[in-house]
Amino acid sequence: MPINSLENAVRYSGELDKMFEQKSVTGFFVDNNFRTKFVGAKTVIVPDIDFQGLVDYDRDTGFTRGAITVSNTSYTMQMDRARSVQIDREDMDETGIASLAGKILGEYVRTKVVPECDAYVLSKLAGVANLKGQLIDGDVSKPFEALNNLINEVRTNVGFDEELVAFLDSRIYAKFMNSTEITRMITVSDFKQGDVNLRVNSLNGVSLIPVVSERMKTAYTFNTTGNGGFTPAANAKSIYMLVMPKNGAHLVKKTEQMRIFTPENNIDADAYKFDYRIYYDVFVKKSGMNAVWAWVSPAVTISAQPADASKTEGSISGSVSVTASAASGTLSYQWYEADGTDKSGAKRIAGATSASMTIPTDLEAGAYYYFCKLSVDGIPAVETTVATITVAAA
Image: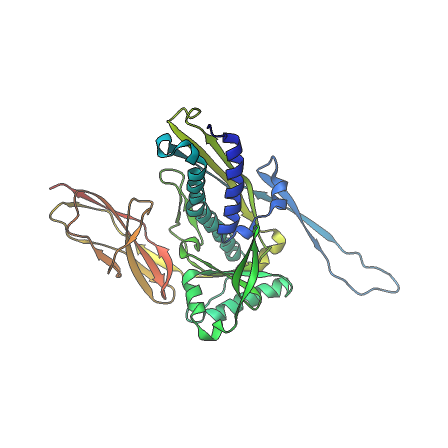
């Protein structure tokens, strides 16, 4: 029975779109109304209106004229990402194509698309807070105090009738939830994300959303070749907490399409081919920028990155090291081995927790890739570049 490519493409696209909204920690920002403004255009101009306040009425001269200021802000879509995936004809029978394809594509969205979109959205929101100087200094040992400070700053701008959300680095969240004083104040509340009603922890009506550390950085490099994906930028800091109104940002997905080709229509291989593309961006309107506040990690300065080295099999010696300092707090180190310079497949190296790491002496001929994650007071802050250790045959 031949697969109906068009019908499946429509069904998969719809399901993947729902999965994005449900699995993404920022999926609730999806704004279909804002998206309609981008139809046929990459950039849209949205007016922001400001008025003067009231003054006393003068019984002799009457009304005092007030000004209306209209400023036009342009919003431009930046993220146009795609990938083509193939499944060999022999890997499935005809009756299993829809089921297997759905599982594979769903897993791709869950493990690749959603993390990248979350990372981009949160880094851009942190950029708004940094641009406006809306950053606080907190104490890692007192996360409750830091969160209250952030909430108060946002409430000062938007009042007490706005629903707020707080994104928390997973390690900060763990510290937060381990406090017996705080847990007595935590309640479970409804949280609508896409078409699903979730139950989340909240504090004084503010929804608490834990986010894995890899998605809580202030800047990323979104790779354009090779394995693709994204990695923290060299100057990236960790976002410990970010608080803002739930409706304070607009995540616009102008395109999330899936094209499906059967083996008969795939000119490159005897395989089913799935082309996935997502064209998206997140925007904070000018009038809402004062309501995005964040707490980021202290500045960490890396004065010497790990250096590449060449070794010979059977006579390996030496180490890779990093020299760094933190503006405040205590630095700690954890070394990783990766599959390449893009840090893919990174694995923690047991016991490698100092500024330098001894290169294993039993390496065989080939290339090996090492980098270090630096933490401040136990919370990941920055990562080094990758050192490539090339081992020649004896």
